[in-house]
Image (cartoon, rainbow, N blue to C red):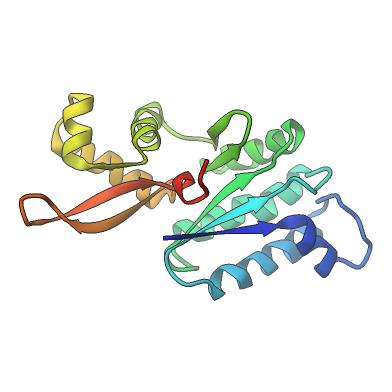
Length: 195
């Protein structure tokens, strides 16, 4: 697993002729999303793309829907391969519009801020949030470890971890267990960034 930071302000400077630092209008969003899609498709699998919003001004709802909600929807359908996204450098106003766009489509994405750490933006059931906290706190966890720590059955734990993976909120790799068999180890996306 590798991580790569994408500076959205730089993409805007390269793709937009008007020099604006604001992500407003669906048309602007489509241009930036298409650029991000080209970058994601060009990356080796698996990759966590950290989308850096720190140099961006306003992000309106239509642009949040066009860039983030569509990008997450397409990630879920595996259009870009084994890729994941994490948002970083968001202001509270940017986060608010992105959250509304994601919640309306029942989607979620991780956000990473130096001052507060990670958080979920969008819609995620409480039982999946609880499981995500376990993965994020440990940085990697096996199904057996989750079941033992959470006092839940293996089937329940496996379903939760698989759902988080399918929602592109955690990563998994197949590894050899201490007993010699193969098992999935579920991993935090933010560990790649070093926060």
